[in-house]
Image (cartoon, rainbow, N blue to C red; front, side, top):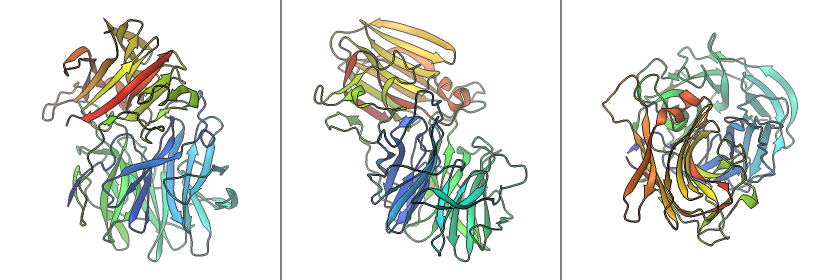
Amino acid sequence: MTFTNPVIAGMHPDPSVCRVGDDYYLACSSFEYFPGVPIFHSRDLVNWEQIGNALDRPGQLALPPGTPSSGGVYAPTLRHHDGRFWLITTNVAPGGGSMILTADDARGPWSDPIPVPGIGIDPDLAWDDDGNCWCTYAGIAQIRLDPTTGRTLDGPHRLWSGGPHAQAPEAPHLYRIGDHWYLLIAEGGTERGHAISVARATSPNGPFEPCPANPILTHRGSNRPIQNTGHADFVQGPDGSWWMVLLGVRPGGGTPGWHVLGRETYLVPVTWTDGWPVPGDLTPEMTAPWPVKPPAPPQARDDFDDPELHPRWISVRSRPAGSWSTTDRPGWLALHARGPSLDNPGVTFVGRRQQHPSCRVRVLLDPGAGRGGLAVRLDERHHYELEAGDGIVRVTARLGSVLHTVTTRPLPAGPVRLRIDVIAAPDGHWHPTQGPDELHLGIETADGTFQTLAQLDGRYLSTEVAGGFTGRVIGMFATAGTVLFDWFDYEPIR
């Protein structure tokens, strides 16, 4: 059965996976967005449904206004041990730190965090046959800890730091497979030099012997369509075969290649030779040796009829109860402004990850006496928005230190449909300065006619321009008063 990579598209990096019987669960990084750490479920390793977020209560996750973009929650590890789910991650926001959460059901509720002081990012959990819990983290170092209290019982001890002179040894995962303990890490940095390496030992705390074929997977220096490959986690498929989930990106356009969706989750097969893992080719089209269910058609429209928002919806740093409602006007999402623009770290914003190179996003909103609209956000210094209010519709572009009003148009009477079409650069046509895509922002009439107000180059909303670790999020915002949204549509174009 064939399937398409990425298996979880859009900004879903640093995947960690565990198998419980016939079910699979996966967690990803969430950075400065709330709720944090999206949790997915699958029965076939290919089709994934988001079932919740591990950090979905304000008391679990503090992301103060001083949290920089691409700060926040990094690289979780998700495991199932002794009948319980365990998740360890790090909040790099001011006052944050590493933490452990537990749950009887991956859907939640998850516990309040248990602090784990004194360790680095990308922490991992593994248990040996004697019940010892080992936490390995970026560096690569290891402690033995009590996971119920977060207290260090032994260490830290240095283990292994990957290849000679390789930068950023990180993302460790430790496994007992057969007669050996395998230590899987990422190295080379999470950009084009990203790579996966492995070592093995007869004890969970070493000494570790590096694989002679390291790095066992990297796309650096290649022309493959998937780049920045790394940060992997082992898992067995439904037929018992071995696989890895890992992150990668899809650059577009000319030089240097811009990726706009963030780092995404991919799946690649693994075989074993002389006791070492050997990943297969990572390509956009793959074959699974077990039945793969056809993917469920994505829900294009959210009508905001439910009292709670779907777990896919995320906000910048926090989502206070007083900033939104689906009951102020039943069937509408009401957003109450907290900041005057998307430059503000506390802006009222509810969005979802862009998951397709080309897509169409539409909303029906009633600005009333307020001001708000539809935006494409990478961070505070890189965003495009359509804003309705004060009798006009305005297209604004924030590009680093430059804030530019591209155009304005009188606001039609009554609720208005705002629309953004993201059009990826065509395949087969390449120019060194061609951008990855183009964004068309405008108004849609009731009969579907699109009145384009601006066409903007998408490269400025890319990681290669803005920096950081995130990807685009498209969503609704309010910058003055209260703005009401009847529905939100997200459709892939191709």
